[in-house]
Image (cartoon, rainbow, N blue to C red; front, side, top):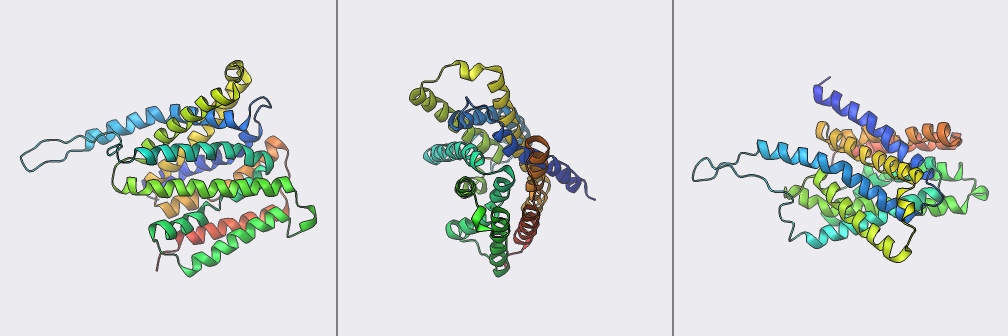
Length: 316
């Protein structure tokens, strides 16, 4: 096994654990802490986590970038967020989008069970295909279309317990709808920023830091203005522990994802992260006492197989 492949599998393994923990920690949110504040503080903790990582990356890139001009051996250093002026409003929009996404994350998982919610989030693969086709004119194969249908079939089986429509919970359906919206907006945000990566104007690590700085700043300021909370809500030990755990788990999942991408191709990295619903199910059973049904199992298998085929299908 190649060294990079081994590293990618290791970081991917830990990523699956951290991503699987996200809905579990979200469900442990203290009663006094609403979804708005949870989203704001999660963004701020992520920003704090990614700040030193961004500095290390920036120093590494700067030390390795030796571009010689036509006049001699002049070294041109790379700058942080090159072209930020022309992307200013795009960055503000991305910050607002991901801030809203973070709030909806907590609302969605309040309504839907962690197992169902985690399975629903795997629809990001479909939305990536859809938005890539609509916005970036990327081609989609017939096989990808077919297995996108199977992906939603697996989700439907998990939600409805093999299409037993009588016992469907309205709350779960609402939660699934919100998490589908989250998945769409998440991919939409990444699709909008993809050209910036292609033009080497920003790195993924820098983008995560910037978007969380904007999201967290806007959410905290608006929360203080419109909700006029008791300041003690920010410093109560139990709340601080929740903020730290949620932001750390979310941030660690992102770090592992980007590190896995640095070692493996996108399709292989996505395949490695495909089993996150399984880790969510294990944690939901152990920590929350939830049940993992046959319908969940069948739906999970169908969804994971569909994801693997979709992301590894080469464009014809």
